[in-house]
Structures are given as C-alpha cells and as structure tokens.
Amino acid sequence: MPLDTEQRNELRRLLEVRRESLSGAAGTAGATGAAKAAGVAVPQKSKKAGPAAKAGKKQTRKKDPIEAAAAHELNEACEALKRLKEQEHRFGYCERCFMEIPWGELVANPARRCCSRCS
Image 1 (cartoon, rainbow, N blue to C red):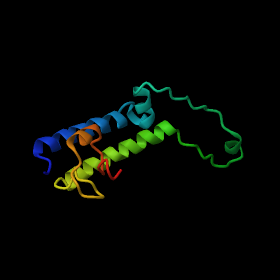
Image 2 (cartoon, helix red, strand yellow):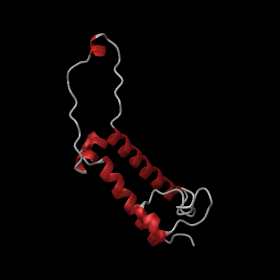
Image 3 (tube, rainbow, N blue to C red):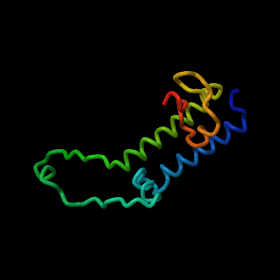
Image 4 (cartoon, rainbow, N blue to C red):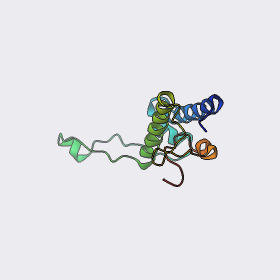
C-alpha cells in the first residue's frame, strides 16, 4: 500500500531535520560542524606550510573519515528529499525488488532505497 500524505510528511520532516543537523551544525564548517555537534573530537588543522607548499606544489589533503561519512549522509538525505518530491508515488518501495519497505525501516532510515532483503 503506498504511503499516505501523513506518512510522506513525517518522512519529509525526518529528512529535513537530518539535513539541517548535518549541514547547519556549525555554519559553513559543514561536516566538521556535524561531528562537533555530535560530540566527536575533530583535530585542529595546522597553519604551517608543508614542504610541498614551500616548493610551490599543490598539497593533496586526505579526507577525514568523519567528514566523509557526514558528507555522504548529507547527500543521501538530500537525494531522498528529491526522490520524495519527484516520485512520491514510488517512495517507500525497494529499488531492486519493488516490494514495499516496512514503515519501521523507513522511520529508522528515511533515505533508505532498498528493503532489508535486498540490501
């Protein structure tokens, strides 16, 4: 049975809360701000220039795993909001087997694309 209006609104609210908590936790700091808001220690960046910067070369910075995970989760929430808006009649159905995803699984993870059997 497709999601009713009340259920879609609840999922939309949950996704917007998740998006806001990930993107607006520390203004422009983005995912680092989300990590700080969650109580995770974030190492401070040194302002000293490394040997590559002194030689005029570009430094490639390794992405912090916490930042990467928060950025991925933020992207998933934004994509789910887009799917909910554009394909509301298909939202809540598995993208692989096309069976309905149980309501409890959707509430636990509103950005879910597949049912527990297919994931």
